[in-house]
Length: 68
Ligand SMILES: [Cu+2]
Image 1 (cartoon, rainbow, N blue to C red):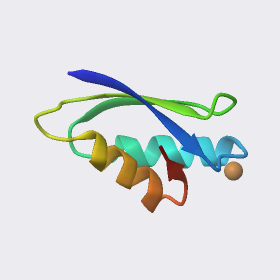
Image 2: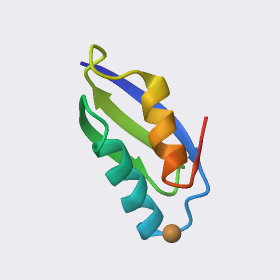
Image 3: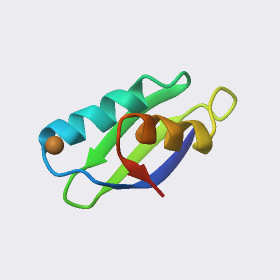
Image 4: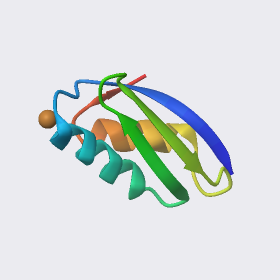
């Protein structure tokens, strides 16, 4: 398992936070996703054999937010 912190831009409320958590949690290989709304970050624990950081950023972007 690998842990990565992704910067997420565009979150303004708890619904955004839940949307990002849901999007990340839906990626195959993700064990957990914790989003810090105030800090604009997402801490994701994932199986690096099943997913890559690119997949995580893509999921955030598909949910309508900007990932760095
Ligand atoms: Cu919102």
